[in-house]
Image 1 (cartoon, rainbow, N blue to C red):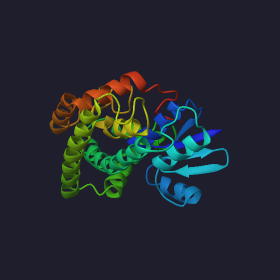
Image 2: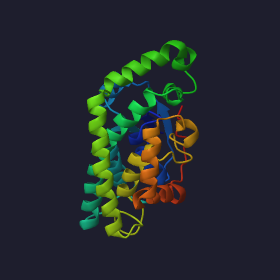
Image 3: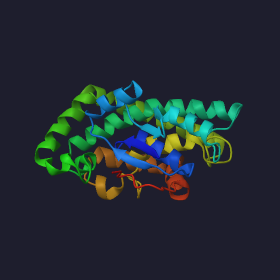
Image 4: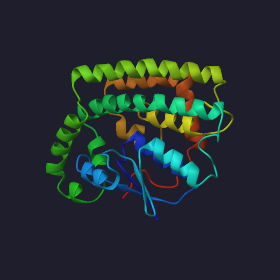
Length: 254
């Protein structure tokens, strides 16, 4: 029995879901409560972040470590080339996306928590105690998220600048590669990492960030979405999601 412990809205958890789906492995996506999740994560893995994969008696934290574990344990449909330049390049791109993902998360959360929209509904899930007592849980969760991710004017501006620079860097890398995949001639960790980290900026259908959930976000968000869509990188992300994201498990989790 495999269980992925997650937040539905987390693009790091989307990355892990995608890797498991790419491997065609059966699993259950189990939601944890933001903030409260830290005690569970610390107990099981010695750190306090998600995603966490439980595979039988093994507990693996961090999306990159999950990728390495999956390739070692389930070598079919590899995420990384076994060795050589392509493997190193994919790991380099994955490393770039880890920092990018942290800044996308901060900027998107700042957008979500300052608008009147449904992101908190997704965060509290469709069932459980948070849903039963949502009148109290929503304001509490909003305060916990703002504090936990250091959402203030200065840090949000820094995150937006980092996004701008890294998007241009990745766009140039993609164009120089020919525009189809980031590494080699098939989908791999680099592509999944880039697409997952930037998907929240594109409101892609079938994702937690699709337009119907995020259409009330700010004009700044909508303008950046249009900017990214117009780049080869944005077109690539939408194409990869459309043609290669064969989801086997509902992102909403249980």
